[in-house]
Image 1 (cartoon, rainbow, N blue to C red):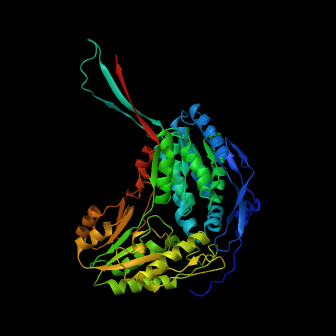
Image 2 (cartoon, rainbow, N blue to C red):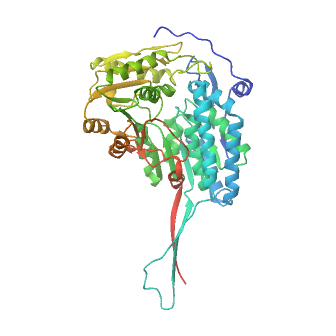
Image 3 (cartoon, rainbow, N blue to C red):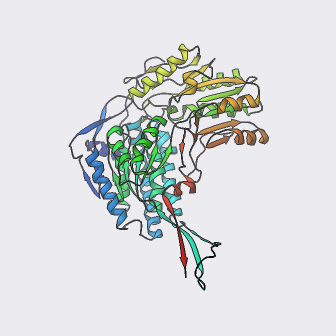
Length: 504
C-alpha cells in the first residue's frame, strides 16, 4: 500500500461542541468531577494521532468513591425497588435519546476509535439502541416459580409452600473494550439495569468519549443519582481496582483472553461473579456446494468489517479445494478495492486501526506469518500519517501450527487453507483454544446443520456471518469466555436466584 494521504473532514456541530469542551470528567453519584489526583490522559484520533480530548486518569480512590455511590444507590432501593414498569420506561427513554443523538455519537465514535462512519451510524449504534429497548421489555418479566416439594417431615397439620424469586445481584463493574464501544457497553448496561443493579462503568482508555456522552444521556433519561457511575482511566489502574473491589458484586468484562485471566485473578478476593466475553479465532468454512459469489462476499465482510477489530471476525478461512483459488482471489480483489481513509469521510470503507501500538502488533503478526512460510496474496503493509492504516491482508500456504493461524490478530488479516474432507475441516476448525463463533457456507441444509452441531463455538452462522440481534445470546466456549451477552440469557447474569420454603 502506497503512503496514504487524506484530509480530515470536520464533524458536525453537535460533535464539535462536545470536542470543544476539551477536558472531560468522571460521573459519580450524579455529579461530574475530575479525578481525585487531578491527573488526565489524552485520547487520540487514531487516523492522525491528534489529541481530541483529555480524560480523568482515575485511580483506586476514584473507584472507591464510584463504588460507594453505586452501593448506596443499590442498598437504599432507589433503583432496585423501583417498580419494573418505571425502570422499563427509563430504559426505553435511554434508547430514544441515543437514537435522537445518533449522528453525534457516530462521529465521536469514529474520531475516537477510527471506524468508518457507516459502521457506527448504521450498524453498531442502532444495535445499542436495540439493546436498551429489548431489555426495557424484559424488565417487567423477571419471574420466579412455585415448586411442589416432596418434604414430608413438617409438623403435623402444617403444609409446605416453596417458591423461587429472582433478585438483582447488586453492584456491577462493567469493563468494556475499544473496538465497538457503544454497542458493547449497551450489552452490559441494559440487562444490568433491567435487573435492578447499579453500575460502575470503566470504558477502554482508547475510546472513552462516547461513554461520557452516553452517561450524559442516561442521566437525562431519568436514572436516579448513583445508579450509573463512570470512571475513566487505564485498565491496570482503574480497571484493576474495580475488579478487585470488595463492594462490587459482579464484573462484566469484554476484551482479550489474557486480560480476562487477570480479571479472574482480581475478582477472587470476594468471589464476585464474573462474566467474560473474550477473544476468538473464528473459522469460516466454504463447502463445495456453496453459493460461491455470496460466500466470497460474506467471507470478506467477516474479516474486513471494522478493520477486523471484531471479536467474532472470521479470521480463519477453510475452503474446499475445488473452489480455493476462485474464492481466495475473489476475497483478495474485494480487499484491494476497499477504500481506506479517515472514518469521517463518507466514502471510506475502512478506517485506521485503533492505535499505532495495535497497528504495529498486527503488522508483527503478518511478518511472523511471512517468516513461517506463508504467502501474501494481498496487503501486508501499513501506512498513513500515524502508521495505523493496515491494508486488508490475505495469507495462503499457512499451516495449523503457525502463530498467525493460532492467535487472535484482531485486524484485517485472513489466513486461508484448502480442504477436501468434511471431517478433516471440522477437526481443523475446532483445533483452537477459542470457541466464540464460526460460519459455514453450503446450500445443503444437511451440511449446515451437521456443521452447526459439530463446531465448538458459541454462535454458528449458516450462509452468513455476524448476523446479530439483541435477542440472540452472544458468548463463547473454551477460552472465549464465560456466560452470555444479549438475549434472555444475559439478564440471568445480573440476577440471584433465591429459594423460599415456608411452613404454614
